[in-house]
Amino acid sequence: MSTQLHELGVAELGEALAAGRTSSVEVTRHLLGRVAAATGLGAFLVVDAEAALAHARAADARRAQGEPRGALDGVPIAHKDIFVTAELPTTAASKMLVGRGAGSGGYRSPFDAAVVAKLAAAGTVTLGKLNCDEFAMGGSNENSAFMPARNPWDRTRIPGGSSGGSAAAVAARLLPAATGTDTGGSVRQPASLCGVTGIKPTYGRCSRFGMIAFASSLDQAGPIARSASDCAALLQAMSGFDARDATSAEQPVPDFAAALHTPRAGASGSKPLAGLRIGLPKEFFGTGVAADVNDAVRAALARCAELGAALVEVSLPRTELSIPVYYIIAPAEASSNLSRYDGVRYGHRAANASDLLDLYRKSRSEGFGAEVKRRIMIGTYVLSHGYYDAYYLQAQKLRRMIADDFQAAFARCDVIAGPVAPTVARPIGSQTDPVAEYLADIFTLPASLAGLPAMSLPAGFGEAGLPVGLQLIGNYWQEAALLHAAHAFQQATDFHLRAPEGC
Ligand code: GLN
View 1: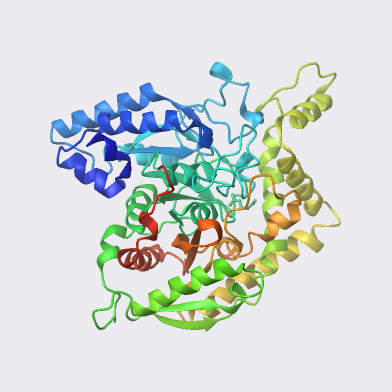
View 2 (view 1 turned 90 degrees about the vertical axis):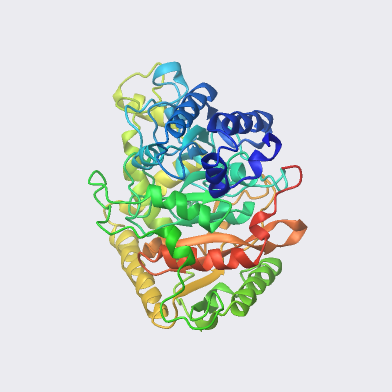
């Protein structure tokens, strides 16, 4: 069976383990072999085969004793290198965190991030840490200080970002699932460009404890897997209140897996999406979307209508403003969060500094990459005395209005749908204008600013046979509604089952 093990998703693998058709050690070995053969993909920053096999053996022993921790026990995954881990080094794909700590492979955390600990408690086996944009800043993975991750559908193209290594690894069948983080689209956009499924939950659903901070009022963890049902299983384990994160919500966590199969309240008839009103914001279908993406998304929505959903037009009139608003708020928070990397308490320390100020300057100049420096400078500027009211305060007011626009739209629909990204994956190195790169975030930023749950699922294929994602946005704490709709779509389509050639 070992040649097909990588083709199994999370649920199928759980079933195979439960039935004794494979062992965690067998599947872990198999996937480690694939990871080793796929180094050109740039998906992993570090792999620890020995530790992974030790955890796999422990999972097998629990099963042998009839005491598995649940359906995820023994399932191999990997974490975006934004989550700190006690067993593995952490770099946030930045040189800033290399050079301090044991072996200098990266920062050695004394503890696991909350999400990492929760997934470990569920029995998952961590293979390693995944590549991303430096400090999660970017949408292409080109901002990794080490190497760009590549898109398995066409290795000359970006996998998206910032969770590019996570999406590339899942798409290439190196792993059934991975963790990501999403501040302004970093789970959804790479999932879309790599043809896999990802969900960013409501802000406050997953603990941010141990997630290296980028923009704290926006940062959320989220799973990337092949299907909505596999995402549901991961999200279940990742969710829940944590007193160590000041913005963690004391919100009950529903049974996401059960919700996949539960018909909507009030739905009549046998169609799986009967009674679901899908709102299509007219601003998401304008001139800014490439024709191939628009066509694939429209076709997917027509499929939803066949499955019983009603399509209604809605409006999110401040969609365009989400770009300046996000690119003021996120850098402002980043400039504050990244001030801790001063070469003294945290981060790379430059040699031969003449005094303290020189040490700060040299350490930060050497440690941070160009995009991170750009954001620290923008953030410091917009927060500075004299400009605070004009930029930061104004952006905060608009952020509230963007959230209000969603509530007006949700009066007319249950979920909102549209594209994730305006185009399919572009070639690596083809974008040198940072502002043009920021504009491509237009469809993911609004839900982030409002703190709403949103997901990306494979909708079809566009130019050059590259994947196109469909975005679904829900109201607060309505992840189950998104997963339910995505699961119904995936039961009726096979886009999420297609693998890149040779994978
Ligand atoms: N592309 C966006 C940015 O560069 C989003 C990144 C993210 O969600 N971490 O900030």
